[in-house]
Image (cartoon, rainbow, N blue to C red; front, side, top):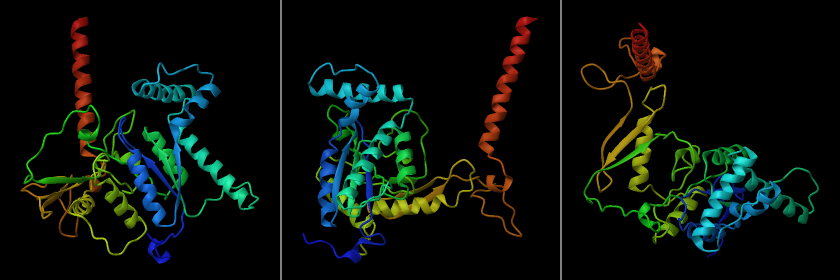
Length: 332
């Protein structure tokens, strides 16, 4: 395919891009990486693939670890990679160490290219029309570090349904006429590895979730994502994207001080059924609106306190008092 017209590339033609792959172990993500590279070439980009596991053995040697794989079969190799990653994080006391390694590899590549171009500077100049694909990001600290380093450059995640993973539990087929719900802003708290599609991976929604890399539509999804990224003016939202937009718009209504979550319910044709958000319910039904000169409001944002947090603190105080009274009775 002929190279796209430069005006088609949006506001930042030739900008250096950084992609990171987020997926569970056993996901055939390399198909997505290949499709991503193929589509990037259509926009005149060259891709540089950075496989973080390729650096495991050298890092283990530098850190003085004698960890070795217990075989050469796929299961043994997978176990070794898991153990190696955990060992490196423990020895360095840095959960984002592999993101730092990937950033170092990008800096090395920049220096090599800049020297070849005759640039003499200690500064690592970004390379135009170059996209780096990091495989794979496993922990939220790694995603946070990459965001901090590369800021507005793109950090998508690639999500796969469990049905597409070898040996995983099958997914029950649902009723095609059932209603579907889209939610925006709900962040699950937890430690350890990132879950596929975890919002901690990506700032401001700059994420592509590929529903099934083992299927046949991942290439189309990758192509659509890049067309949108480079500013294609003729693509319109899918029903799912439109629902997420409406869910996001609904979340803006929330004045909750802990988090603002919006939801949109659509039918199988993509028609909107209802929207909602987490907000203080109003006596007599409905939700409180922003205050006016004639209508007061009792939302958290006006009261200045999170009602949920206040209630949890009160419950904790009562539990402590009850336990304390029980101890006093036992001592008497």
